[in-house]
Amino acid sequence: MIKVVILGSGNVGTHLFKVFKNNSQINITQWYSRNIKDINQYSKSVKTTDKIKDLDDADLYILAVNDDSIHELSALLPFKNRLVCHTSGSKSINELNKNNRAAVFYPLQTFSKDNELDFTKIPLCLETENSEDMITLKSIVKNLGCKYYEIDSNQREKLHLAAVFVNNFTNHMFTIAKTITDDSSIDFNILKPLISETVNKIYKLDPIDAQTGPAVRGDDKTINKHIQDLKSKEHRELYRLVTSLINNLDNEKL
Ligand SMILES: NC(=O)c1ccc[n+]([C@@H]2O[C@H](COP(=O)([O-])OP(=O)(O)OC[C@H]3O[C@@H](n4cnc5c(N)ncnc54)[C@H](OP(=O)(O)O)[C@@H]3O)[C@@H](O)[C@H]2O)c1
Image (cartoon, rainbow, N blue to C red; front, side, top):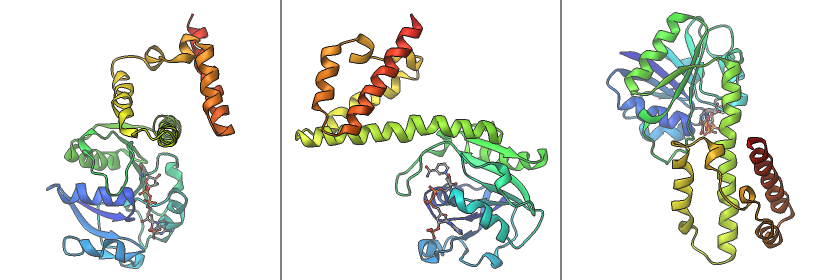
């Protein structure tokens, strides 16, 4: 049984708590949050604390806190030479204080507290300072039934950059699309099968081969009408820029 302490009660901390709690090979010895009221409701199933000085003994401490707080919180841990990881895609393993053995346990997925997720489908990106600690992280991942990848801090930084495009920027495109449908009293749900198929295609085709639409067809009259119809200057600029990027890529292919 692997003993784990979770620090942080945000999106990732809460998901890790739920999935570890249901795993017979992982024992959450404690859950730390500086806002104890966030985790009080779970205090019957796990020991909770808001005092960093009271942290229990464990095989692994997971800092599921804001990127900018990782360094500061890791320096406050009241012990030495224990295995401590963060869960960030964008922060280096060196962000963790050198008093302890540093590691990274980065789940490549988008987490919102109240949105259930199937952990077996989440790739885990692992990094440790020494090979023995990698064995501990791998055994957690295997118990969860996830795939894992050994990825160093430089690679993870690039992966996170790619993830911003596929997730954050794509989601913002959905937000823009919803303002357009809302403005014309159209139910946004009508776009959902198209959204699903756009994503499903990527499992079968390279993204460049999956591209359709007026930009790739060179339908300039349609493109100009779309630009005219957009209300905001920024959205018109965005439309022009993405259209020209699609065009350029298509020309490079020829
Ligand atoms: N959300 C995602 O989709 C996702 C995916 C993969 C990886 N990650 C990574 O996972 C980490 C956590 O992200 P999240 O989305 O769970 O963030 P979040 O929902 O904003 O939660 C952050 C948690 O950190 C706590 N915290 C912040 N500063 C602290 C400090 N100085 N001392 C103690 N606790 C502190 C916050 O406490 P308060 O409530 O008191 O502020 C909160 O419990 C980040 O490194 C992020 O990059 C996130």
